[in-house]
Length: 273
Ligand code: KIV
Image 1 (spheres, rainbow, N blue to C red):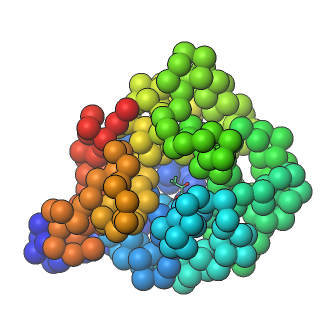
Image 2 (image 1 turned 30 degrees about the vertical axis):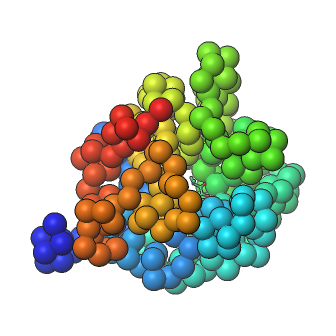
C-alpha cells in the first residue's frame, strides 16, 4: 500500500457546501477527519480528505483535559488559524466551544470570529438549538449541527454512551434532526447512535449526514485523527480504527482511511452500534 500511495498522491479537491451536497446526491461518501495544527491539516488535505473538522476534542487529545468543556473560543480560534495555514484549500469546520453559543447573538459573534479571523468555512454547534441556528443562518453563517452523543453535556449525561437506543430517544433525535434542517443547517454530525437510526436520519434529511460511531449508512464519516492514528493514552472507543496498524506512515494511514470511507469499507459492523 505504501509504495502504491507514495507514487499516487491525490490532488486535493476544493470542496464547497454545494459540492458536498452533490456527493450525497451522487451517493459518494464524504470523508472527514479532525485536525488541530498546520502539519496534520496539510497531510489531511494532501490525502484528499473532503472535510477537516477543528473539533473541541482538542481539549482532550491536545490539551489533556478529561472533557471538551475547558476549551475556550480564543483557543479554538488559534487552532483554526493553524489548520487554515496548513490546509489553505480545505473545507474547514470549526466548533463553537462550551457556552460560546449560549445566546443567538453570542453564537453569531463567535462564529463570525471563527470564520473571519480563523478561516473556517462553517461552524458546528451541539444540540437542538433551533432558535440560535435560525438566527445565525439569517446572518449568513453556514452551520453544521451535532446530535446524538453531545460531549459538551458530559457532566449532565455522566458518561460517554450510545444515544437513541430506546424508541422514545430515537424519535427525539429524528425530530431534532428534522427541526435543525428546517432551521437551516447544511451538514449534520451524528455521534454514537445505533446504525439503523443514523441510516433512517440520513435518508430523511436532504443535507449530508456525517457519522462517528453511527454506522455505515451515513453520507460520510468523521474520526478524531489521533484515534485513527493510534495516538492515545487510553483504550480507543469501539467505533474507531487504528489505521497505523496497516500503514507504513501517517500519510499512508490517512490515504487508507479516505479509501475505506469512499468505498464503504469503514465502518464495519464491528465499529458500529
Ligand atoms: O470535537 C470533535 O472532534 C467532534 C467530533 C467527535 C465529531 O465533535
